[in-house]
Structure formats: C-alpha cells, structure tokens
Length: 494
Image (tube, rainbow, N blue to C red):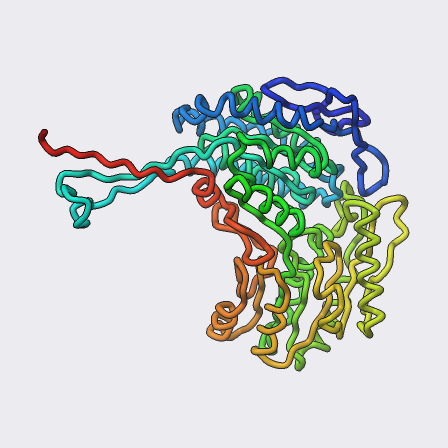
C-alpha cells in the first residue's frame, strides 16, 4: 500500500500507531504531472479523524517528552539509516508524485537523511542557561540563590507540508519536533501524500512509539483547520502560500498558539554592471528554472543594470532555451512538469499579461507538445514593466522576468517593492558594494555571488514580512518548538 509507488493502490491514514482507511471511504486520485496519469489514491480524512490524530498525539505528550534525549536521538538516527537505504525508491516516488527531475529528487532524498541526523545531534545542544543571581539587587536574598533555565517541549505540533519538497520540507518539521520531545500530527499535501506516508513508515519501523507521529491527509478547509483549532495543539509549522499562512496565523492567534510560517517569495536576483556574466548566467538559470521554478526561494525577478542588460538577457535566454524539458524519471531531464494543469494555466496567463504590457518574450512563452503532462517551456521575458503581474505575484513556474535598473538605489527600490522578503541574490565583483546592498535589501537571507535558492539545512531559514514568521533550521526550529522555564533554588540555611 505504501511500499513504493502505489501503482494504482490506496494509501492509509496513520493514527495512534494504526494504519487505517478513511472512515468515509473517500479517496483522491494522485496524478503524475509528467504523464497526467494516476499513480494511486490518497485517503481523505474526516474532521473526526483529524481530531482523533490530535488526541492520539496528546495521549503520549507526557511520555514522549520525558523520553531521554539519547533515546530520541537513537530513534532519529535509526530513521535516517532507513531513509538512506531507501533513497532510490524515495527519489523515484518524489519524481512520480510531484514531477521533480530524478536527479533533483535524489538530492532531496539525501538531504532528508541529513535532516534527521542533524536533529539527533542538536538534542545535545538543546538546553537552557544559568544566571548570576547576585548580580540583581531585587528580589532580596539573591546572594543565596541559583538561577537557571530549561527548555520544555511545547506540546503537540501540527506539521503542514507543501508539494514541492514533499520529503525534505516535511522532515524539517517532523525531525526537530520529535527531537525536542513533541508528538506530531503531520498533514502532507494531498497532491503528494505517498512520500510522507513512506517517511512515517520508516519512523515507525525505526521504533518510534505509537501516537508520537500521526499522518492525516485532506483539504485545508476541513482537516487543516481542525488541526489548527484543536485545543490540544500548541504549535503549527507550515510551508505554503502567504494567503493560507496568514489564515493559519489568524486562527492560531485566537488561542495564543505559536506558529512557524514559511510562505511565498518574490526573490530578486540582482546583477550589477561589474558582475562576471560567464558565472552569473548559469547561476541565474539554476535560480530561475530549478524544479521548474516551483520553489519559494526561486529567482523570480532578475534585476539587471541597464549597461549590461542587453548582453545578459541574450545569453540568459539562449541558455534557457537549450534546457531539456521532459518527464521527471528521464535521467536527461533538466526541467520537468509543473504540479498540475492549473499551474500551467496560471503561468501562461501571467506571461500573456506581461506580453500585453510590452514585455518581450526572448524564449519560451508556450506549452511544449509533450503528451498529457503539465509542462511549460522555460521562459525569459525582457524589458518587463514593474507593474506586470509576473513581477508582483509569485508565478511558481519556469518564468524569469528581466527587469532593468539604473543604479544601486534603483535596484534596492525594486527589490523591496513587493510585500515579500524571503531571499535575495547580489552579483558583483565589488564585495564592499555587495555587502552594502545586502544590508539594504529586506529579506531573511541574502547571498552574494550565489543564487537565491540556496539553503543550509542546519542554519536559520525564513523570511520577513509576507514571506514568513519564525525560523526553520534544526537548532532554530527546536528553540521555536520549546518553552523556556526559569527555575530558582534558594540554598540559604533555614
């Protein structure tokens, strides 16, 4: 059922350590974006089943939180070993579910192994601090007190994952939560549930106690809201659209629940006039077209200084036009399909809108003839006006609008002109100027002479403004997923 690609089979829900079919008998077809054909059926949980998953997690909250850290670490390392042994199948499953080119899917599978290993290691560093009580005048008697803080598990964590990294981004939520002593209810995207279910099976087989990880699949309006609203959930960690993320924050805020939100971005890729174009162009290709641009950190706006814009755009379009578009499981594919036909329609509409505003299509701007898959050709637009939708709204597709700027001040203005602030890239030979520009761009991360879509799994990651709230990255996520408690000891002689 969940041993590999289902080949028309049906998945199951994981609640309280038991795999079970949905009580409603409802399933949703999961479509391979490369072929347009179904690969299996996802179980659709009811509100009652979502509540049952939370109740199952809450029932083991105390016991899992009290489990020694070295035991939790051993279980996480055992899961990492199972994932390492299974990475070929996991990669094939990712490629089939979400259309990620198989070479990139292998990278995702390997990264997930590292996430669980890093989470196990960070357990050793998850602690509090001691404080010099006698440094404080009040309250009286501090010369006879010892003060220290500890970190307690926050409680039941809800992990809501996206389609584009169905294994690694869900791992970034599950692994730190488990490491910090929290039980989890995971809700993977309905577009790609089987990767998450296979991950859950590996964790169960590694020895994770029943109820510590539960997995339910279903629509956000029913299942997702039920998980957020349940009185026993304490933190929601979410990756997805800004609109949905803000809705989660609003619902969670009513009950004073903590959230970690990794949302959308319009990440600027800034090319200054002194940048080495022979290095910049390949980097821009990776930034804009990796996984068909369906990455929150993709280089979605290519800002190029006027004096080199013509030369850059020509070379960029030539290289983009040569990319191999094809099915995800084809080893030669460089750009795979979008997640579904609706995504293709959205991208095509944005390209046409930009064209109507006088933008020039240098390459792409069309749907290639590749069977029933949801493909769109890598597209480079030049001389795109700032008011075009493709410069203001996240396309989440293989579209790279080139926007020209006059000077550094103009580049900063354009870079900061959207509500987003996830990541940014600046290319220049003048590192001092690059640093100065990086300080002025409002973003959670700025990369000098590297593309926007870099991420270090062990380091803090997240955005500002409409791009996010809180930080992922193992140590930082674990801090978000714990509560600080101050403990005082009065050792004065009675």
